[in-house]
Length: 512
Image (cartoon, rainbow, N blue to C red; front, top):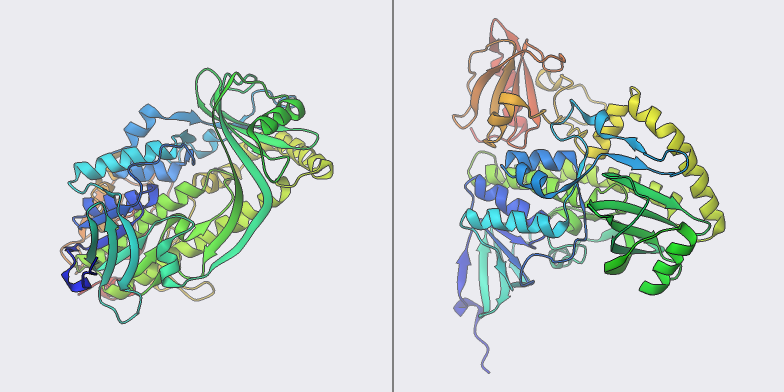
């Protein structure tokens, strides 16, 4: 068979090539579509994942789904989880974490909504935007876009009809922990693989687990966590394997004997080892990494899929601004500056927790039982104390601050406000405004004249005074499309300083 020259292969052009149709890639493509940017998603699978895999949708991810008009669909199909039970004897009903989040997010608690359902929801919404996923299409290689001087991406893609070229302005690698894009970029995936092996199983007829509660069990040699999937004792079991090469019958027999677990049947069983890794960079040339392609860590706390969804939301909004000419191309560097520290913090936190629990042997088991007893007694008090909102925010992933100036430096006037860098609580009329995914000016309890800003920045919108006093009436706030506060301009006689406004726009690399 005669080889066809690259120049003669079919060519497809778009704004953004998204490699990988997991939750991260699908979220990125949907946000881009809603922002009026063309994106093509490719994935070698034949369709959305069938296994449940990741399970938990945290509060911040629900806020993003709400911005996209999809939150109600998640709520209708999900199973809520609002509390923990660490020791059945010490606290049979467990303790609730959702109350500590109430008032700080419209979606307190967590929703158990499997990865497969997330993918189906996002893929369906994307198809509704006229941008269906190109299933059965595999990235072969990146021909262009890796070098910093490149002004476009060109990829060789293999699909059902053979090879083709796909040309884009940017590429998002959302193709998982074994990312082809990351390998193409030659970026190290720094970290470790844990020695312990974990097993997961979908069980029915599980007894002794409180409704809507994540429950843990600690035995003489092992431990397990149950995540509620639905009524009738339907739960996901995650447990430490007694061997490096686990067998389903052996593992479940050990769970019955050591942990006193009772269930009726098994729908699905698998095993895995936990990785704690982060890419050395999130960008090279015109290609960027998101989700598991950029960072992987322990599943403790149900943080992984949520971090990927938030990577995608952040990056897609940023690329949309660049593609539409609102920001300069170099503004894309903000993605790594803001999201890589979040990934490092997650990995550090989950790695520490994992180090406490993920060891085989009776000595480690004794430490786990002692630790669980302490937390079981202190947990309710901590979540009801002044620390409760902080703990709830960390768990829900909405307690994130994107620093606009390096730590230790004196901030300019527009950044010298506690709200800058935080996400805006999307409630009431403000939620409706944020669904537009536009740059906006807001005031709270006052009115202000519109400063000299580009016409694509909307507002100022005048909202009622903030009952908590976190958003001041003597400020005008610049809000990013992802809902984070970009700047706060002091008001003098109802007007913001021209210098403050121009300085903030320059910092965000707004095109004049």
